[in-house]
Image (cartoon, rainbow, N blue to C red):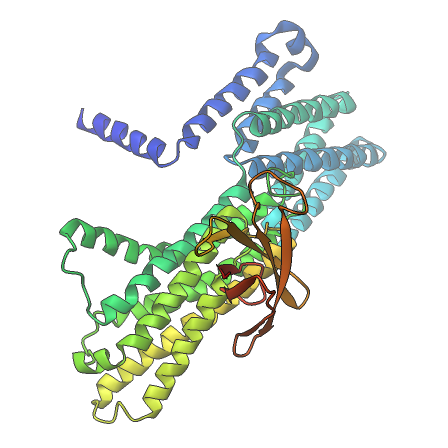
Length: 494
């Protein structure tokens, strides 16, 4: 009984981990019940006979968890069956011309050549990635038709029945997979990358505090345990390559759905995933220095605490923003600012190191400290590369622009309200100031006046030049230069 309870508990855990698995199981049972009617329903059995079993076999081997995997396997099986069937009929016809003595010899030669050549082609990396199953079915079908055709008089009828049942079985799988609670491999890949980036952000957001040994007094044991779990979540990213590649391969077979258009740039996801794993490897190495045998003294850590914490915190915020952008499929806005802040903190740390602050540090401690700093700098550089790749993906996949809500300010000594929006000009940020009647429903020119304020940017030192009118004085702060995200604070004067 204990084993039965263990099985029940394991079943509950698997179902709770991903409820779609339960739905998929019911879908497979439904399709098998439908194609089994070829045996149960006499008119269908009279038409196909024992060849109806090919429909059942097709469902068992073709129906996969995701739409892309099912569609890919179904199309591969149908195409391989058609092609192998045609070649098998041709081989049978050529062998029959040689007479009863030479026919089995030629058939054996044809089967040998086809099986050897197809098996060798399966070793090609690109073929194995997408068409390995197709070649396997091609070998099987050609051999069965060629060999069975030697003893079968009506080889065309045999081939027609087998191909028909395979098509029916494959089509049933594809239709049920798409129209009954579909599971999209592309959506899973998209969510996986967003989750991986978020896991890296958890580590970076907490690393500065852990490295400098700053723990809040109010933290409970539960908070500490939860933080530790989030802190170590990055380790699952290290082994995500095979999962990402299989999901990307399946996603290429899927039709357009939701926000994922046909010919979505899935290859760019693999590029981003590779950079994320490189960053995770650096993080794993950096994590080892938290509990290393040789530790830098607390005094030295305190001296370097401010730039170290800024580097880790800003890169973590950039990762968090990128995760949100991927999840919502919007263009990243403030990630550029966080990356620049992290690079600025890196320069500050470099200047501190050049000032001779580490002259009295022991050599072993110095090596440990400089290695940790080097890894953190590599992580910042990889964060910038991930952001660049994400911008490319956002452009290719047509992510939406992030829309900032308008910010309102009340005029001093007045009941009027003004509001501002940021729009993107070619070289300038253009802020439209709407005064006295912006949202009162009155659209007359008298009550709904507007002025445009041009804010020119200098990207090197982020100096803004403001043009003013005689009514409103505008102060602006740009969160991410070069993007449409711009917060505007409006201060009015009489």
